[in-house]
Length: 158
Image (tube, rainbow, N blue to C red; front, side, top):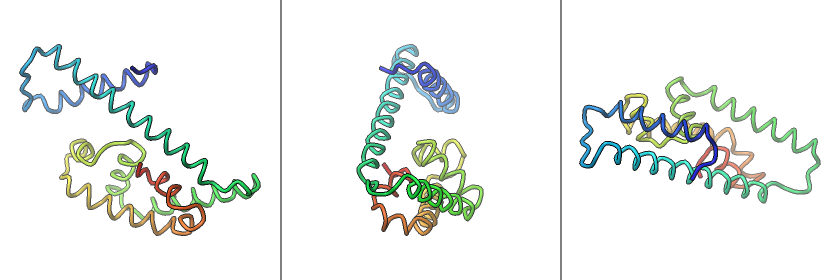
């Protein structure tokens, strides 16, 4: 299903790490080999789904960007936008920044973040809400310029 050897290794390693974390509460009804195979296949499907979603968002971004700007203007806008994102990240406390990064750049779900950081899902949701509010405020001018799709892509809400 997946051609990238590094991605395959990461998927298998992730399955083993999750098994190790949940080893005390795990009850396998079938053979352990069948359980492992199924877990790897499901994780592979998740990986493919995330890849397709990311590609779709990148494709949509190309249609959102104005075509009439010169390369210099586009470069300046990109630098300004990156600066705004950095400013937003700097306003976040360390735990909020970690949660935001794992969610938006690491592609983890709230439940996975909560498990990894050993905190409640409500804490993750609360911090994500605050982080998104900060980023929305910092990127407000870009919402007006390029439209909502661009900012949604930047914030990873795809």
